[in-house]
Image 1 (cartoon, rainbow, N blue to C red):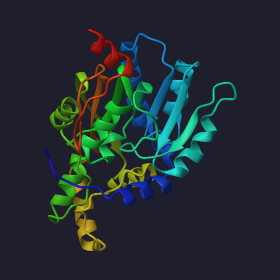
Image 2: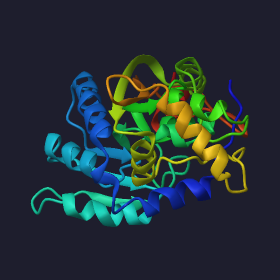
Image 3: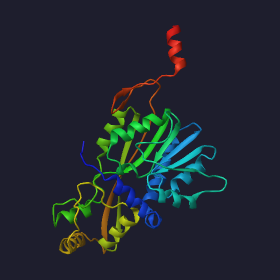
Image 4: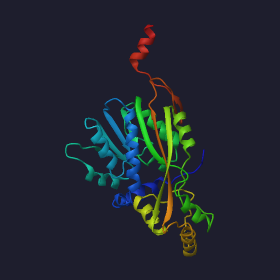
Length: 292
């Protein structure tokens, strides 16, 4: 598995600053969200509790509440300004709750969530065992996990343009679908299904893409990034290298999107934690086994 580490404080800061501008740039996020909602068709029951992890400005949370009006829908995000912005999507008759928390430390009881939904958030979490271990912990047996994330080909043009001028880290890296799938299986999630799609967005010039990334909060957050300011010569060199990729008057940017779903494990299946494997049983089932 790829080894890289994100600066979590920087991730939080980037998205907090982008709360006011996010929805000016979220065309792709809305498109991926529509596809992700289709995954919920696999869940045939009526959920009591639905969790939207990395809810951002709450568009997805509002759609989940519309789909499941009787369910408790909880929007979770690590950036409090995003949750403040989510208030604009609250419907008077269909409110959802907003909780500031990290995906690897959800403030919810074990086995309390029927549907766990996350749209383009998991790529900002570098500890996959902790992430999917937490998903397994909160999901009810047979509960549905449905999420989308960015894959390693995302922003490959921007990465190549920077590579033409230096060998430093300027663009966030994202994990391969196979690494994500392995982490899901290792955590104990059942029957994972993953798909990959590639979207190509075009821009008037490279600066328009950089403005969009900043407006989304999706700027470089690897700990391996250069701490000093990038020189103007290197910056101009990157722009020139990107301009060489122009096609039909526009510059392209690739976004590789991994969409996946899986199911909460049955009672008693061990889940992996940093302290070892943990299996849980209800008291009644233990008493029943003693009677037999």
